Image 1: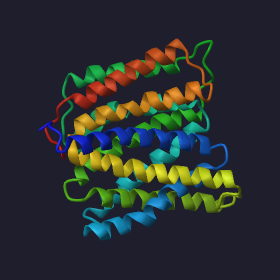
Image 2 (image 1 turned 30 degrees about the vertical axis):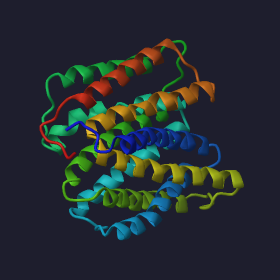
Image 3 (image 1 turned 90 degrees about the horizontal axis):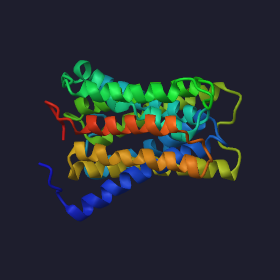
Image 4 (image 1 turned 120 degrees about the horizontal axis):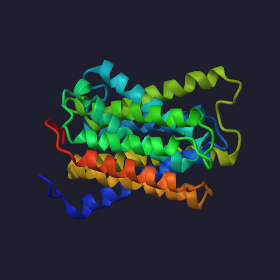
Length: 292
């Protein structure tokens, strides 16, 4: 069950996936200096919306899929999670936002019985408690900490929505292909970004070359991340992929600390270690039903 279907190809895909996701997070953070949240979101989702139908047609797959209401709900959860994370990037340090966002394995374990009917095993609660202790350690007011703001809330809510997205993918993946799931994410995300953008006194299109490059980076890394993780999941069990994907967290946090000169205190290190290790532990726990 855990043997790689094609070792060289599998290793390439599973290495590229966290790298592209880390690049997506970094590019979204840097794009915030030149673009609004809605412009970043529209750039990401519109590009995917344009190319996914061609991929689906070339592979002879169904585009619209089954259980369209749930597909739309899943798309909204995933797209709003991304928009909130981008908003968090603009308000709090990149490293802190990513650490808080990585609470999603804990939220996934909590919500799993209601969404997929998979009970949370007793040992999982130790990891869940550990993750929230790490969060409390990070957010608890202290002399070196900044004031709590909407950025912290956005990162945590994005984490909850990410958990809902993953659980709905487990449920919908039984009847739908991975490209249909991605299509609904891009469709709902483009609509969710375009509507508020048209209501604001901001140009819909980027106004400088740097801004256009920022949009292009977010769009390209988004599609590359989605396609590589899909290829990894085809070749490697989801539990292994989910653990390897945690590499994204130290990569993004390291970029924030080293390149953006973000503060790195002992509370963030200890709290992040708790969240990170508990997330890995939750990913490795067996479940009674899988869609691998």
